[in-house]
Image (cartoon, rainbow, N blue to C red; front, side, top):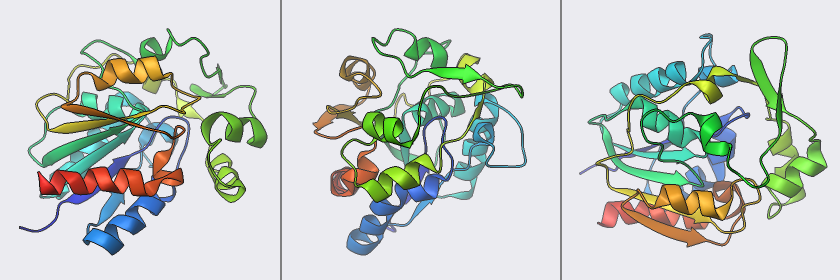
Length: 234
């Protein structure tokens, strides 16, 4: 049986998912012959389509329609996109990385609202939101404290504004349900609290804690690739 394709759905307020995923993609290709793709999100201005959560979910469903067998990886907000996309026969396994398994009716904003030290955002004049109070150093210290300087710079260059509807639209489906899934809880994460990660990870088939910050696919791609490969052995 041919290996599945890995489809990566990146988090909020960034663009260029292929860059974020590339260290893990390279390992998977080299060590296991597994190919990867990254989804472009309309809400982050990565496509010609304008929209929020609904349009992101529709883009995910279209990508899944093109693929025969998929290990779906959601990072942070990417888990909410996966939830809204609903069940799809192409999805073989689900890997959630410091991510979410929201029940129907939840919004990304409501998920984040109870955090003890929330990431601050502000509206712009075009119906979008952007990070508030961050520069390259502050961003690196919060989101990539375990990364090398070059990765921190590359990440900051890919921070972007995002359609406000990505944060305020309630989910209507639970695409994470009834799929064999692993949730990675990043215990060094300074963006999403460990408590919130664990609460959402409890809905996955299994939860595994890793000693990383918010982006282990950049800083410890070996740990993330190992969990993708574990799906193939089960």
